[in-house]
Image 1: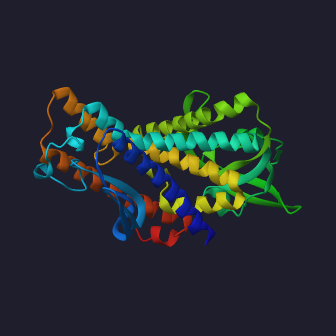
Image 2: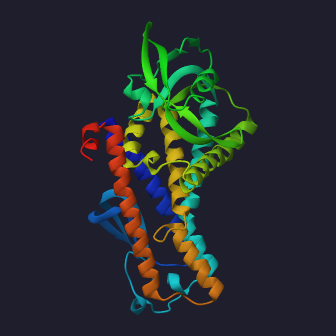
Image 3: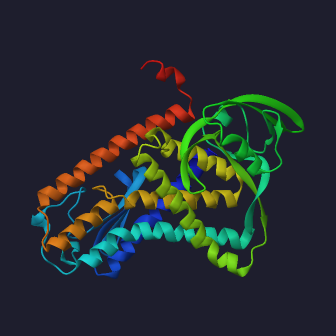
Length: 362
């Protein structure tokens, strides 16, 4: 139940903030908003205030803001345009760009505020030592039985004192089997863990490293004023950089789409972070908010970045693209995204629930 509730909170907050960005930006330039929906149809409940219908819908994997005079994959055609000043189509290019990218901006602002607040209240995080924090669901460490709070004592007989000792022992050994000794409740245990092989940037260069699917635990020291004021921007920039590296790795083939996580993985990690405390949970919301923002910036039709590219292209050629072409591009993008979502859901199920017997059928 905690996993489900925490997932609803994580996704609900991020979707609400994203769509609120579109809503406020539209209102700021005089665009009439017809619908504001959290979730996709079918509709659960709705109410109307002013010119806008507010909805809660049953499918909690997104949301939308329907604006007057905006023709996209959600519907509409040229016959619905009247040329009224409150229509999206009547606005200048910079105003349209502002509206379609405001959701992403709000995702980043949410992360900045959360990171700033966490630092102000809890302080600056420092590695606690070679203690297991969150685990990648279905990853090597979790599959071997490691749990949150375990202290990793040694790898192949080499004793570990710091988290850096752990990464130094694991990174150079992709695809190898390690003998991992750990302590739980005062008792020592030993397991064999086969590392994953992953391409990542280390000290400025891309290389294959070994991973076992564990994240560190942290201790916190009080933050000074400068650290509080800079923590939000620095933390957000750091995660954006990590997401950019991951996208680069996917595009160049250095990483596989099998590494991608989706709703099931997010749900499980939401529950894990909630069990570890409010600070971890808020940090997780910030991390996912940045990922959602970066995803929406991709220049794929049906995403905010795709809409922005079309607007920029129309501004460059000084005329609008044919409506049928725009709808076709956006519907194609939507189909590709749905296909990717289905693949990620399948991948999540394989990883989180360990449906190994299904893999053997193919």
